[in-house]
Image 1 (cartoon, rainbow, N blue to C red):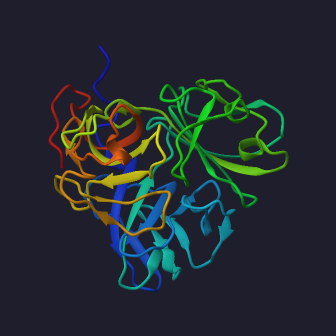
Image 2: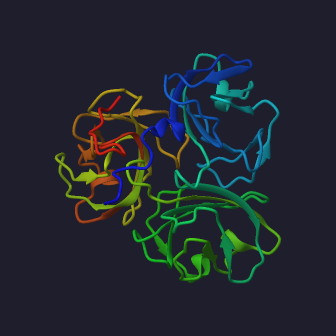
Length: 335
């Protein structure tokens, strides 16, 4: 019988961290008592101000940011994220990351085949081809972003959730679109993912970054659910108590939304950010755009069409605070 989870301590591979800006060098240490983690990807957003989302990774290097809400090319800023620490990170004076008095959230991942996360940079060829990855399993969620030139949207593919001809853009609100030139109408495998001829993912001589995840039982889940249009929305089973959930209405022109278990820190979770927008953290009215973080998944508690349009497929990604049952078969208590 397979283990309930291979990761008893999700904090070794994913952290949600809150901090306040001070306008000067600001070293952050993760404010938990769990396993130390040196992050390989840090995604930061001001909760209190309309600054851009800022994303950094260890493959491209410190000081180099791309913005999930923008088509802008990679930019280098010596005053942005300056270090990936042994249990945190350091930011400089850039106001997107460290405006004095602002509050921020940082979502941080450790690159690991065990935890189902891979980061890679590649150069396009303009010809349909495959690109190797290091997950040793079929990826479930792929994000590709052009870094060497502007005009590059954030292209998302969900294995099994949308057809291999389809994509959706993280930086926009549009529904899924079909184009065989994106993923060459081919699902990824345990060693490669496919690229078509589109310059959005495979332009000749253009540089890209790709983020790939696979579902890891008890730690992460990527999938779909169908909305019912009611405040008493669908229950989505993940097999763990979530720390972080992203949802997009795949069939509608609707915003992306992300919730985490640190804001407000209790159920019902009514505070969210939108990856496609610079807007500050939003607080939902009751029964509109809320979710419950449960011990074994999440429950939609809102009728808003962004997360619960009746009859529409919604895609989601979720990462754990704690597995529902640990690797020894013992039920866990959410921390």
